[in-house]
Image 1 (cartoon, rainbow over the protein chains, first blue to last red):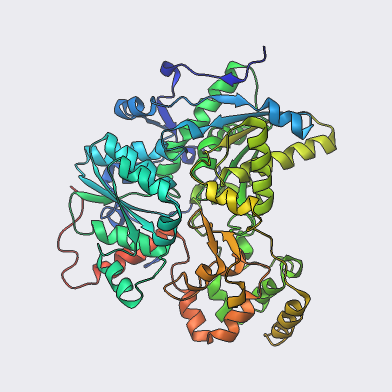
Image 2: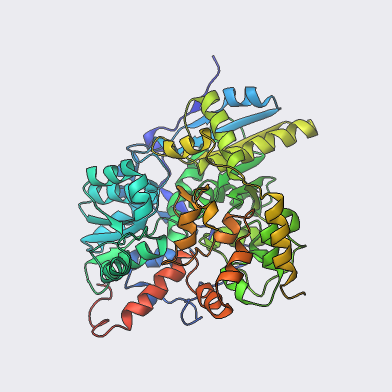
Length: 453
Length: 92
């Protein structure tokens, strides 16, 4: 019988998190305060995060002990299995071995609890009684709700109204774990009340929900805010995924040629990848791939990622987007990179060429996800589908090159609460819309009036 | 642009599907800062230029654009400026 799962015993769970900052060939630039442009100081963060997490945020120590109380909670579902995807390999018909870390087995169904549990614990020992946060579709909100409940902390989640209405199950998960989940804009904060007064039907936005969560904890000594992505300490907590995977692969005498994760905020990708990035820094041959959506090309097109503000500038380049990707001009570096929500560590690793970013459009990711579900059974979260699309591409390349490859990727969460997304895909509502000829003609005419370089 | 309102895409900020009508008003009745990259095949940039004067576009471009840290610290700054704010708080 073929071995499908590689398991670690409870007492083999990693006892320390890995901080890649200790091994970076060049140090990361300090995070800047968006208001002052000066490096962020611990006191800037102290109003929103507990000092013990701020210390982790700033730490350059290579290894940081995982507290026993955190390990006890993580052991409810960790170590997560490393599984071999034999069935998926078969349908890809390519000389690849595919291994994946199944992070969908956590109670909340994703990798998010790895940091939620740690953050709830550090808030608890700092004396915090209530944590507020924002959430979009609810993956983070539900993970934090569960973690706060584990440590007896109150939890308030401001969930963007449009998601609140569309994702009742994640809201119910939060409520089941004892959290208060409010549709944002809400009547709880001044920000929310002001927006509702202007527009009672406001669908909300992530920006509004963040503002509400911050306002909710401001000037309250025993309340803090929590964030489930982007920050260094979040990435740190997620490295338990890669550290486990490293041990599991060692157990079976295998080492990956390619490590893949999906990168939205970057934490699940970094969580799997960083221990292997460490090997790469020390000379080991391994490709590390961050898969992101083409609609949010933070890494793949970072230097050219013009945003809304550029419309007001004299550059005509943005106008080219009106005509679709065929018309995007040759890369031209903008004055400064704008990284929209990606973990700075991941951006830095891309800049150092230790990580290769790749972008996939929504239809190819769902196509890959459906193929996966039909082969391996587990229905992936839509974000996870980006990593699977990268696996598919890597398998195709291996076939073309006639080269055997071992692929490791992070199966970051299940999609059982995201079936509406699958419905949108399967019913053809998600399309890569192409402009009719007359619209292209009209857009060309409009572009012709823009300033020329 | 309203004729595109029912088209649907996956929102990278929220993690669920939204219609184009949401993207048009996401930023407190103004378009989402990511509307251009999320809808590459629609004539969004041309529409924005035709609909909003440069100073409005500039001001919208200066809003936090989905970078959570920027939003967090800009919110913090604005709350600190309120009368009576900042008298309490800090760590333990």
